[in-house]
Length: 396
Image 1 (cartoon, rainbow, N blue to C red):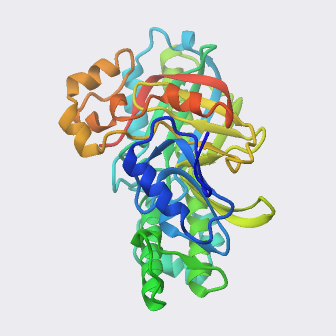
Image 2 (cartoon, helix red, strand yellow; image 1 turned 180 degrees about the vertical axis):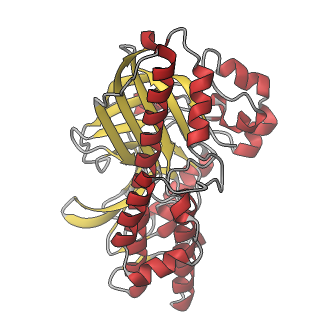
């Protein structure tokens, strides 16, 4: 860890100048308490750095939570081992998962499954009538998007840990509805700043102040979107389990049931009210997971690399947080200019995936070395399991 200034502490050994300056700018906001913590995977983001932990006293910055509110990971450890999968058609398993879960930006279900309907009803009950009308307005498809993956760095994986045990692992968030909620409240924050003639070092650091209607509406919508993201991952994981059971039963000729030995579901784009350094603050983790002492968490690498199941060390200086993944070093456009489909194929040797140039910008070389990120995080989390991909599912 290094101290970049009195209100900015950094755990990233790989940090480009633009990202560093962005974090320094955010740390100057007057309501940061006690300091901003920059995680090992930090990279440039909208307004605030992705891979940063931003504790705010009496205010919140919507862009510092991120536009995919509640984005995060879920993993399930099963009773199966890598040996149980040998000789079986992993391409067929991948295709079954792809048929069961809508992929890609804008993807949604044609009909609502019973499990999704139950979750949708719970989400409707969580919102007031006024709030639900506000959510439904620009996001009329959110009910049908529950149980869909999205695109970009979102993925579904079947992996094996260091002991050969099979895990299901996926990454997704609050889909279109979370994005629209975020964009709406970022725009509201801009309007509030203009109304009161507030000068900002970056317009996307626009904030909302506690005890105002704008703040209360944002927090209500934020917590709802976080609940949606959690439910979305649960719905997808249930479908992965179901498809694996169907595939395994067909391959063995006997009925197979997955024994879920562990299930972990955690956000890495979210905000929560917590107590740090003597005060109640809103801790916005934009590309970071909570890592309270003993808390289970998930840190994915990139396509073709390892992912990690961890427990938090409760590092108070790091605000009980840790990195959320590898962190980009190439933008999507620069990755496409730099790497080829053959480069991606070489990175994915031995992994069943859909071979397409749509994923070039997700090549491991476009990200920081996940092993270096984990080395930088040695005082933030303890690694419990190392996962290696066998099957990878992504949306275009």
